[in-house]
Structures are given as C-alpha cells and as structure tokens.
Image (cartoon, rainbow over all chains, first blue to last red; front, side, top):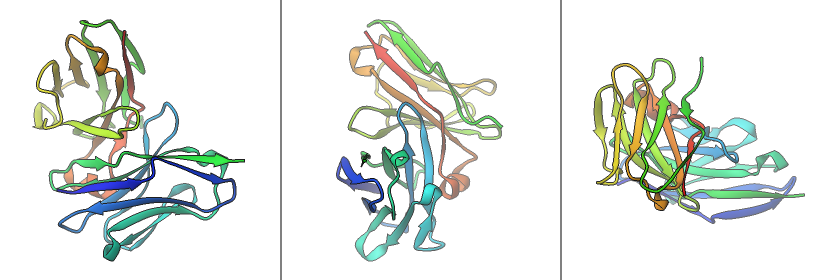
Length: 112
Length: 117
C-alpha cells in the first residue's frame, strides 16, 4: 500500500533562509505525489504535484519539489523563506483506490 | 465558480447530541471525500462517495458515523451520539473522478470544526 512519511513535525527557519521539508514515500507502482499547504483555520491548498511528467516540479509561492526514485523521496524546497510561508505542509500520495493518503504534516515556523 | 463549500464552519454539540456536517462539492464534481484532522495526526481518510453511492468507507468508525451524497443536495457526514473524542476538524474534498484526481489532486473545503462539550 502506498504511504508517505514526513520527517520532522516542526521545522524552524529564519526569514530569507532555505526551506527544506522532507517527505519519503512507499509505493509499489509509480506514485502520484502531492504537497498541500494549510494556513491556520483554513482548508488545504494544493502547492504542487508530481505525475511523472518531470522530476523537478514547480509549484505556487516559489516552492518546488524533486522526485528522486532512487531515494523514494519528494522533498519540498524554497530558496528564501518569507514570513507568510508559516503554515502546515502535508505530503500526500494517491493510492490505487483513488484515495489520497496524507502524511502527518510538518509545521513550518519562520523566525524573523 | 465557488469552491468546495462546507457548513457550518464551527459546530458545538453536547455529548449525546447529533452532528450533521454538510459539503457542497465544486460545480461539476461528482466525487466527494471526507477526512478528519486531529492535532499532530494529519488528515485521516474517512469515506469516499459518488452521487448516491458509497465507494469506500474503510476509514469510517463502525458505529455512530454515516455519510451520504444524494442525487440532489450536499453530501452529509452524520455523527450520532457525539462524544468528546469526536472533536476534530472535518474536511471535505471533491474531484471530477479518478482520472482527474491524480492529475489535479483534490479541491478542499475550509472544514467544519466540531467541538463536543
């Protein structure tokens, strides 16, 4: 069965620093992978998705993620953090039954 | 084109009462998914419905919880005889269907935050 593991439930970075949020997946078939962002008291918004077209995926708000099959990873990065990036980020994988399975989330804190 | 609409945004119920959560999918979407979010636990899948059909309810608790998506009207998640442990945020998402969801992901509503007192 497909699943994702997010390393680190909380990550803190300084404003302007690199953001790196880690996600590893488990899948017996080529996966469809997603990153979602959730701002306080809101629903989830799709940041980006991997659907096998390209290994480096660019999303909204300057985020991107790279699919690495050899490492079974799909880490999310942003070169320079902004205060408005403070939110919770979820890595997710679509399984064979058309369900999207989410990781436990990583809360990103931006330090001034 | 309104997105996925959930109401109410906040719901307070006393133990033993019933909670009814509503979800209107995006226009044209016929597939609805319900998730529950507890602090530090991420989103847990509950149920997947098409119009008038439950496709997958493997994440639904066996008792007190039910869901429907009638031909007309919103999808309803119903929790009978609520207990404190039901307090959580409940999110609804929709898609055009399997071929769409793996390309675009789901579109989520803003959630209903249920508090059981």
